[in-house]
Image (cartoon, rainbow, N blue to C red; front, side, top):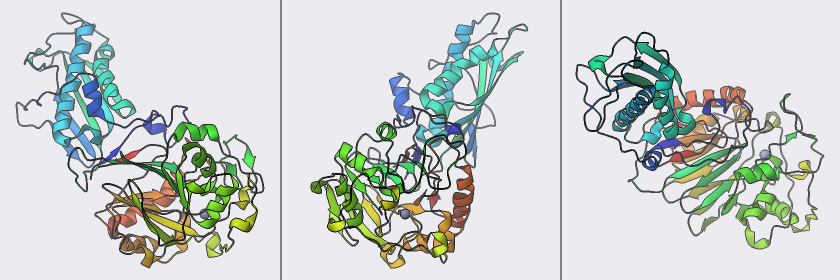
Length: 475
Ligand SMILES: [Zn+2]
């Protein structure tokens, strides 16, 4: 299995600390090789090193590439000094050719350029006449192509310097450092449909392959309600007794289609946006009686609502789903318990108040796609014997502080689910913060200790920290 992040248009490093971007969610699948084809670029066979060194060295997740120059497919090189016999335009073209040569090396090392997670650092050396000072304009030929191919993942730190001479009199030489995704865990044959998983925050996901789009607890509005909001969040504050409200413009920018929506339970931060999404997309909703009673109150027609209690195993056109009885997070230091339920007689009137979105019991879902099986949790608890034997290869694992009060949670969870190959933490963020606000505190509190534990308990598992709205591709 190949794990490949796909980019959105927001600069990757600002995802956890910057501001929101209206372009967020206009993501296209990250496919640098298709991008090369679109640019009409064919990668050459990487040059063989001419001495006792190699083209690139990988240490950890970083690859350090040896310096390469502007060598063209016919074997010629761009020679000469900038500021003397070579123009800036020629130098720029040479730097662009150098980028193509380095991509060829990377492709040979990685097999697939979509494993590039980040271009980290570039050192551009320009063979310069003594008074030449336009080295950056030359090395731009390299940087521009890299960004054209990798998008924001291609933006790098850089030095562009002048040299008194370069080997063989070549006009430029450029080296770079690249961060790569960990090696694949499971392999599928080329051409098979990958699975793309996009984290909406809270317990919300979009899971799609070429056949079907499935949403889990899609909650996009991220209202600032109750306690726990961010001091710099200047949006409206809602009390729990206020009427529920969905940010439909925000939803529209991130959710355009859905075939199925799986609802683990009907708390506000799981169900609040589903009435709008179900109406807009016509998606079929699979949820318990309380959730579907709320959706009925919002006018979602019966033919869209599959009401389940846990134990069902349904085959649909392009995927199947097993409904797994589960438990709600042990909130409030395990004092939380809510036995309330809604049914046809509940006389609900939309819009509900925020605190009328009651749990109604909690489910988990085993969703089987063409190539992968995903076990989706909606919180930080589960029934061990219900998970045993499901053996998902991808686990959306509830990872938040409330799991700490449970007996040996991480170990029991990984064992019961058969030590899944890919573990994606879910419900770990502060869902009252708008997209773009830093979630670093929650990453440090929830995810980093979990990764440490997984390393010990299930060393074969790969934990990927999802970034809001940024698809993770699993081949
Ligand atoms: Zn809940």
